[in-house]
View (tube, protein in one colour):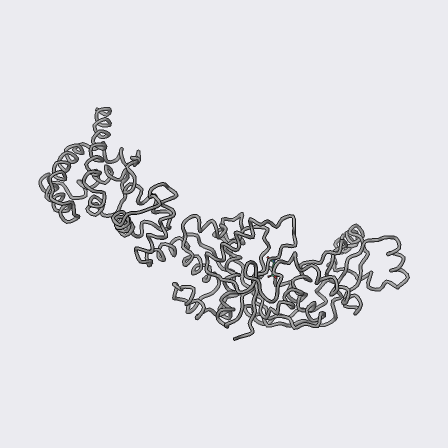
Length: 492
Ligand code: GLU
């Protein structure tokens, strides 16, 4: 068993978006590939913005994507608690220890004073970093400020020198400490800040690898220094490139990146979403595109993640979804579509064997006209409900044509008389009718298509008519004839 331990550390202050899901996936793949553990840590210290609804959504999205966590909410584990809000007791004593060891110091500068010095620096064209005024306070001065009741924050004393780390994605990174601020570890109300808490938690949970978005790259040298100040070994880091939306701006909730749950509700397959987000920055050989989760475990390698920004293309995701849908065996595709059909009221809770077989035939016939599970509702609606709507455009374009009534009447008679109602027999009679009328088959089929589906696009007409069944077809031809008569009467 490998000792690799990774964590995904979402804040339950929003839904899991595609970028976050990619971070979760890459961490998970790293753990699975190494036979290690994937830990889910909930960073819920912002009590006002954290909600149970967001938490449940994050867990649900993990389950849906297949990212089973080894330790964390619901499953527990030896390194718990896994909610940061339940770990608050561990931070205070470590801050005290750092103060005692001179690795941190109290700073009494008020926000107003800091602002004054910051703007003075800006006016002088100087870059502002905390000027360490409080680092040099004598014991008396400090005692006087305390006696005054001055609030204080705790700052990290950044040591001199340079920090180098080998980023698993970006390669070697070097930062001169002169560029770092003596960052705040605890606010004046005593609450510890993100950079401190995350280091303490990563150390105490034995996290060996941290994979996260490149928006955190600048935090990494600080976290490495804090980890060392605490006497720990910092994890190995990897920073994932940004994901840009179609407008070349960083993907965000506001820029059309939907929450994972939204894709689920829209009928995307988890296989497709996982496959698609895996390719946001990673490629196997630059060519292969289809990877199931277990194939990803085998093939994924962080060193093949590009440091360049990845582009999110919703069209490609939809295409990939359609491809995955097509790959599912028909019974399984049907199973997954069922909830969508039920919600639309097109299918009841219980299906007889006959209904089930018919439904599978419909799903097979519709094939890749359904790009999402939800598309089946529109694509198969006319098979499952008599309540079809005739599209105005289709009616105008097709049913008002001269000769349509002759076609409808001619086929009505033949379809009434045909033996059986199989696609082959239907095809035969439509072809011979078209010949008799000296019309192309398409000319004959189109009015029938509008009559039985309400629109001008559908799967093959012979199969469609057969699946609809004689009774339904004849009833719809009658309905369409009525519409055609009314329209043509009104026009003449
Ligand atoms: N809760 C932090 C975030 O969502 C975690 C960052 C990290 O991975 O260190 O950005």
